[in-house]
Length: 262
Image 1 (spheres, helix red, strand yellow):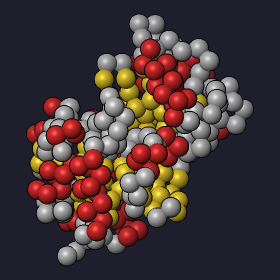
Image 2 (cartoon, one colour; image 1 turned 180 degrees about the horizontal axis):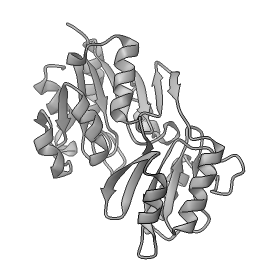
Image 3 (cartoon, one colour; image 1 turned 120 degrees about the vertical axis):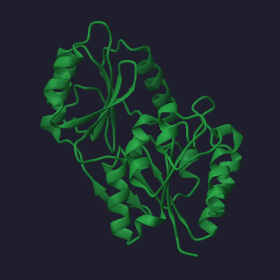
C-alpha cells in the first residue's frame, strides 16, 4: 500500500471545542491509519505552544502550525518564520491606535494586551492560562516577536485603517463577525502541505485534509482529497471532495474508512 499523508485541523475537527477532548473513535482511527503505513499531521492556525497535551499524546508524525509558519516532522523543526521584533512592535502600536483587540501568537510565547475589551479574548486568555500556554507576556514586552495573530473589532475600532496599513503584508482570513486571522502573505495551511510533501517526496495524489472552518480553505483546496466535517461552516460543503459526519458522530473514523485508509 502506498503511503498517504493526512492533515487534520484541531478545533472543531479533531478537538471538541465544548468539551476540549478528542473523541475515542478518532483516537483509534488515527492509530490505525499509522499502523497501516500512513503519515498523520496536525495542520492548525494555532502556534506550536498552543497545542493541548491530549493532542500531543496522539503521537502525530508532525505539525504544521501557525497557518504554515512553523513545521515540525518527527520532533524536528524543519521550518519557522516569525515577524521580527520591529514589525511585531509596529503591529502592537497600530492595534492600540485603531482600538482592536488581538492575541499575538509565536512559537515560544503568546502575547496579550493589558487592556482587553473583547469577552472572547478574555475567555481564550483564561483557557490559555489554565492550560499553561500563556506565560504572562504582554504587548509591552521589549523582545516581542510573534508569527501570526488574530483580531477582534468592536464599535470603536477602525478596522478599515488597520486593514489598509497591513493588507500588503498579511492575508486577512475572515473567521466570523469582527473576527479575523492574519497570516503573513505566502504562508498558509496549504503552503505548509506543499513544503512537507516536497520535503518527504510524497505525490500530490496521496494528500488528504480534514477541516471545518474558513481558515481550512487553503489546505482543502490544495490537497487531492478534501474532507469537511459534518459540523463545518456550511460554506465548505460545496468546495470539498467529501463531507463526513459530525465530530461527535465518529466523523474522523467515518472519513478515513470512506477512503480505505483504515
